[in-house]
Length: 91
Length: 214
Image 1 (cartoon, rainbow over the protein chains, first blue to last red):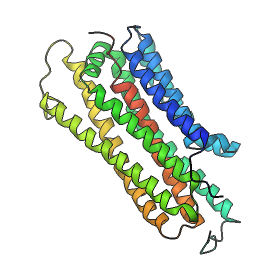
Image 2: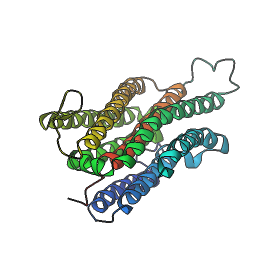
Image 3: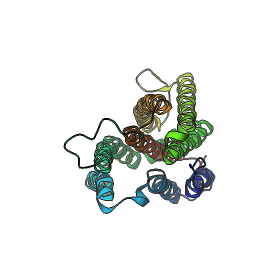
């Protein structure tokens, strides 16, 4: 039989993403000082990981595809790390 | 599912061709990550230098439109992932319908963004055209809005390209879908999800700062 309905992981990811969106907006209004930015970015990274793993199907991919997908993150890490080091450590 | 014409000589099989297309798409996405990465770097540098200005700037954005647009994009990504999952000759009408719904959500995103831009123009918050924010924080707020307009405009451009891609694929899928079309839809879906991920971070960096302070 041909599949017409979305699979359970797909629906769960979609509802989870909307839940995380509600959570991040709510948390933005709770005064946490500098931790507000940490919470916002942590939830953002979680949402991005859900999209990458389930919508982009990376959870079903082999090591080679993960390597190609991770390459962008690797270079982004170098860009942000070396780029920000001077600004964050300068007194 | 018909597969014509046969695969190009450099590929051993259909799956070899499709895997190569997917890896190529990830390489392209890596270059896009670095395009937005440069913007992110400038954002963090200036947020570090002007924390109060960026918090004030964030408070001046439209959180309701931003949140609605995030929900719209997440839902459109879900519809596209659904279309990829069920892609088959028997489901071509549903596939095309799901892509059409995702396109409509993408257009709704662009319309809301336009309404938001108009509101910021009315509030004199557009650097270079009409920016009248005064006070100690004016420099930081102006840098925030320069980032806001450049980042969201480049993102909106990606959205418009994505809408065009999805429209072409919706038309192709309505005809006689082949494995070539499945590979093309898969690549376009990766692009659409990537644009969604970019927005997830832009939302966290633009709309959320400064909400808990007055």
